[in-house]
Image (tube, rainbow, N blue to C red; front, side, top):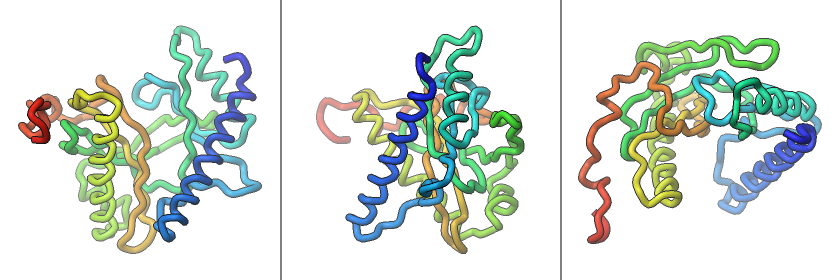
Length: 232
């Protein structure tokens, strides 16, 4: 990394522009709401999540605030001894997240979900510990204020987003992606309402985190198999 300060400045400028575009599109759509609790405000230190690409199980994920700390994180993540990957992702950090849904997607359908949340972030911004709910009901009860309507709203949004992401992946590669993990961040934004953000995709070889292997190795449904005759 030749100039981490310059790289940090570019990253923050790009995220500010993306935020402005998102707000502009919402206004043009007649005020269509979108999850706004990741938005930054003028005068505040931008809060970011910094991730080293192709790392594993959140080992190289840091939470930072401000351009200076972002530059330090970029430099540290990209120059670790024994590491050969220098691709670092920078995201806006959500102001509040109640939990994370790690969704295991097979041929475009969610076949299993783990519900987790951060338990400890150390002084350097590294995520050190996670909590894991044993069941969906436990996650809703303990982390989502036992609000069944808000939970149903979140699950509905996850299904819609997953189908959209699967369609997007077909635009990147004509061969359907067999399996991918998509991590969503969930917030109970109001009574009976939820906001859902896409956190990240996990490439082939992602951590199953306890999901039974047979769930992720099933044959593709007939409707998912490529056909030269047109739509299934």
